[in-house]
Length: 277
Image (cartoon, rainbow, N blue to C red; front, side, top):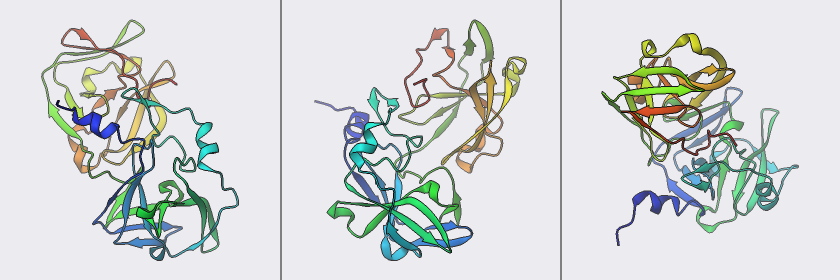
């Protein structure tokens, strides 16, 4: 019997997964390179949907010490309210690195007098022996080869696909039409919902206010937000990364927070990490 490919991938979310990387990976603290590795791995702890870098201890130019705030993976995970994706609880980047879902030991890093608490994790798994998983957010800058990386490590099995369309799109919230377009750019990024990027002229800016919120995507770059009645419902990339340059200045709405009508058909609001919890 045929199996849906997405089911094969999501069925492994409960496992500890890894993939060697051919990229040179570097990380800095206070302008000093403390990680420089050509033997890095990408590691997904159970439930995690984005990877972390793991490198051999020998490739870390910092003092690695036992964490004074170490917590067991079991007690840490018990207090987490996990978001949903495809009907499954998942740990997205909003769940702190310090919440571990596999056996191991949390470690602190000390470099040039600076200490980063629980910035590393030594997994108790033979396949990762000698490696430390590193907290992306505990470092000031990351580089894949000579390119600055943002948000989190890039997943080699993840991609975005942008296509131009003539579908009729209406965006509504609380009975008001926030946008209407017949020339959207559609961004596909499985397993996330389809996102419709609309030209600025197709959006009613009188109903939306600039937000102070900013976020970063490893594949698209720095996002700025627009709010409706005080809630961030849309975003735009003013200077996206090269993979997303086609959607520069276009505006996309959270399917989870607005009512989308596509070619006259109202779409159900999907349940994702961006849904209200």
